[in-house]
Amino acid sequence: MIVFSTERTPSACVVHVDGSLDAHDDVGALVDSLNREAGSRPLVIDLTGLEPPNGPGVDALLGFLAHAPTRAATVLVHPDLETRRVLRAAAEGLPVVPSNEMVLHGRFAAAIVGHGHADHG
View 1 (cartoon, rainbow, N blue to C red):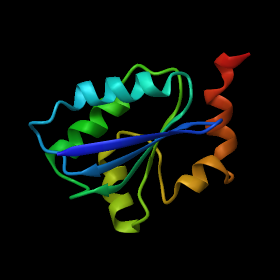
View 2: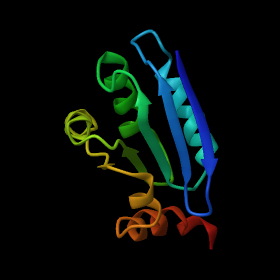
View 3: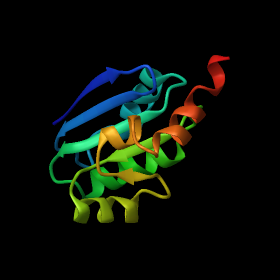
């Protein structure tokens, strides 16, 4: 079972994903829900609580995220180096970083946050 909690910051919508994801889960509906929740803010998906962090369900999630129509950037987060490598291989170009702080406050933030606020004029 997959559980997610959402944290809205001024610069992004951070989603913490916990539990397990398998091929039977409706990842398309999950991604649609996440994108609605994010609106025009960048979507930061923290996969730290996802067990296991790979497999058919995760591959499906990454595929839907990579091809979802969105007005803002999507970034994946996982602290483990080897897991980030696995996620990058399946993420179809989505960035994978080690922490939410790097996305929200680090040097990576300017590009992501700037992209997400283009619609706020």
